Image (cartoon, rainbow, N blue to C red):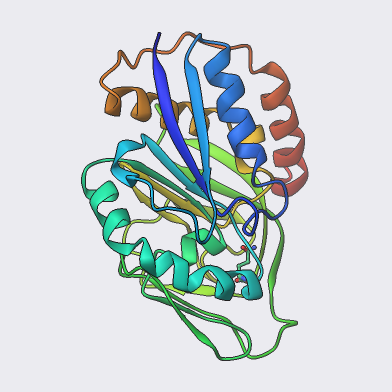
Length: 246
Ligand code: GLN
């Protein structure tokens, strides 16, 4: 039986706007294809697992306070995380998790929370807590077999700069920063994004991109049998119609 090994990090601290739903969606899509989805959790202070042994590592979003709370623990994972990323484990990072893999996140109170520095981007929140990027968002990405409009929800103060390889182009909403045109960060084994929702619920192509990658990483056949995504796509098209006036 094909198997994907997944580590959900800080699920108890970083889980905003349905982020843990992304795990349920991946699990469902694997189950429909007879793929064993082995999900484990890691919380601050736990024994350090061998991060490279996972096909996928997932970190959700959180408020500034939670990000501060896990920051020291995350630093403890730095070498392991770099090893896992370099050896090809997939990193799926939402909002706060996205910010913490960059150089740093300076929060709304001016505290500089160090990131793991895996990537060159950095994030700075405006001084005023009122200036947040909040609302529905649509981005166009080319990572799937065909270009796809991806829909989600964003709520972040942090403005992310110096993103060299974004996940997509913003069609509606803010993305990496207010007034900018790009959203998220992408490499073949990294999807980092501001999209909550949970993000995968209306965007099955993104879920399948990750599942295929993970199967290949695990050494298994990556071919996926199609699933009936009519409902997911209908939900998305309702939102696209509303947001893009399509
Ligand atoms: N606290 C961070 C910010 O406001 C991340 C928020 C989030 O994960 N939604 O930018």
